[in-house]
Image 1 (cartoon, rainbow, N blue to C red):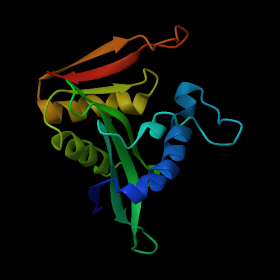
Image 2 (image 1 turned 60 degrees about the vertical axis):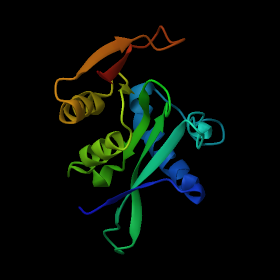
Image 3 (image 1 turned 45 degrees about the vertical axis):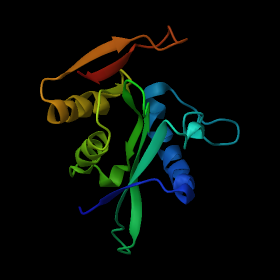
Length: 166
């Protein structure tokens, strides 16, 4: 699959908002997430973008039916100008998975921001538990570690996993 990775333009945050709903729907089974009364999923993290210490990227690929460029994923990064860059959210639409796009997309975003990185994900997210260690090894070799940390205010759920480059 050919694709292009571009920073989210000022007029493209609504595209990310649409993909965000798919992202949260995808996580629903992992985090026991229900939509809010208005039918949308939680979006408070997304509402913090754009900001001086945050940025986003969209992955674009030709639509299989029209050939027109279509958004197939997004990445949200926070912590620009701070000690660690944090991959706050990362998503590739299901139809674009399994062909290497996610790995290339993640490595591209990591490569755009020098310095230490932190990548959190949920314990019960089996796909992320498989994906992110492979990406970390490709990005940093053996220069990373995975830890677990309690979810703030949620003693009832397993701790989150955090991958940190050294």
